[in-house]
Amino acid sequence: MKYSDYFIESLVKLGYTHCFFVGGGNVMHLLESARTRMECIAVVHEVSAGIAAEYFNVANRGKGKRAFAMVTAGPGITNLATAIGGAWLESRELLIVGGQARTDFITHPEVRQIGHQQIDGRSIVEPMSKLAVTVTKPIGLNELRDITEYSRSGRKGPVFIEICLDITAMEVDQTVLEAAPVLKKKSEAKIAEAFSADEKVKLAELLRNSSRPLFLVGGGLDFQSFSELLPRLLELGIPIATTWNAVDYLDSDHPLYAGRPNTYGMRWANGVIQQTDLVITLGARLGLQQTGFAWQEFVPVGNVVRIELDLNEIQLDQPKTFMNINMDAANGLSQIIEIAKEEHLTDSYSEWHSFIKDLRDQLPVVEGATFQYPEFANPFEFVSELSELLNADDRIVTCSSGGSYTTMMQVFAQKQGQLLTNNKGLASMGYGLAGAIGTSLADPKKRTVLVEGDGGFAQNLSELGTVQNRQLNLKLFIFSNKGYASIRVSQKAYFAGAYIGCDGETGVGLPNWSKAFESYGIPSIEISGSIRGNKEVLSLLNSDGPAAFIVNIHPDQSFLPKITSRISGDGKMKSNPIHLMDPQLDAELSGKVFKYLPDSLKA
Ligand SMILES: Cc1ncc(C[n+]2csc(CCOP(=O)(O)OP(=O)(O)O)c2C)c(N)n1
Ligand SMILES: [Mg+2]
Image (cartoon, rainbow, N blue to C red):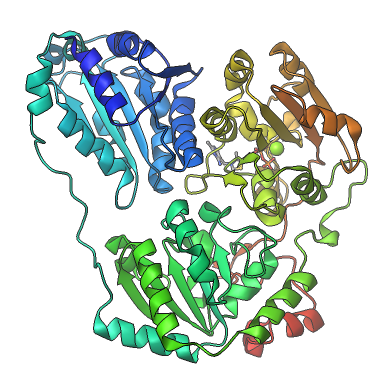
């Protein structure tokens, strides 16, 4: 049997059903083997193969189908690198199969190049992968299972397997390979299975004494486990906030929903987390976007208990916590529920619930003061209206940087059953369309909706070819503000408006969008105001196949509220804690909505 056949058949046995790829000489055998054994989706650029595979697996939520990316040696891998970085920082499962030159060409690493397109792919991706291997001898099913499982166990992340061309073409004995053992088991670091007696006592005491508790759930607590635990969790009556990575775990109308606190967007949610007396974080990395750059002032009047799988995150000791437990988040949550039940907590938290409700009413996600351009669409109203229009079984993808992303995270009101995916850690432009393609292919019958900025979209717009070719049921909303508003804003704030490389006048060339969509045969319309009751929008939104919506937004439209930084007298950057967002609230409102904080923290 040819090894490429064996390799691909092994991946099929391991559950892989979809391969996102760009072809090339060094993977020609692998591709030929995959062609008849799984669904192969040709994308235009390798970065999209990686992103689409990542989003496909997120959208599939462990329900049977599984995707990987396959790219050729050299440029295939250099092109793909961003997708590996994104999956690494977001801790997402991703398998990359890469080509490599013949084994006899890679024996002289001191020489820059011998084989065609030869480059040391493994070294490029190694710092961003859980594991990166070069296959110079055929590996069997057991080894492959071990490598691929490693990507999706523990703290998830990409794994990379590059295979030398001559190995892919060689004849192998299937029975020998099938029986081959795992060469070196890739095992996760040891973590606790159960709370210690001391931890149990402390947790029980904290829960007993808390009248304003909160859970903060992150993507490290996977959706399936969260959903299984949810009925028991809800019985506790403790409000639940989510990170941007767990944004669709609970619908926005749920009485216990406590929003998505962040340095951008939801002011009310920041008010909630900053006023808790106890926050238990579950699989949330507590990075700076979550805690604020002023992380010393994160949860200033309460205790933080962190359940975290990765000991390195705990040892970073940022932010300050009352207690850290190095444990799988689902396991930790299950035990916390038990402790809370044993305690027979008497507090129904009714005062806390009604305070949160008031906070949400007084600090609405669409803030009137942020819109001054009546001839243009109001991005905040637009997202609010879009949430109303979309159905519970829609798949929604945002991009990863810029105003459309933060607006979605600020305003979009998710419904139970909706999937809402993003990738924030790397914050790379060009993510949205590829992510939407992967999401759409995971469930082609469902409608996938993308919201992305014009700058970010332009970085990867060649994938419109993939959308057109497969006639995906993909609805593309592009925030058209003639370039990079985010960059304009910072050049205005820090450099007195010395603009460069942020719009057409300062050097960024963007297409005429309707013509660009037309050239791919994708119908489009422009939106410059409310979409409520707009029949044209509704009919295109409900049509089959791809369609685009160009949402005209004023180039000077600001995307607020957010935490801003100032350069202080000593040249250092200074930031506010996350409840003190710009624009600042007036003193009266601030006094009401921050009533659990000392005066020194109210403004
Ligand atoms: C690959 C990459 N390069 C540069 C940046 C820095 N950056 C952040 S936002 C932005 C502009 C994005 O433009 P657009 O998508 O139109 O969003 P807008 O700023 O207009 O809201 C840039 C260049 C980035 N995030 N990713
Ligand atoms: Mg833009």
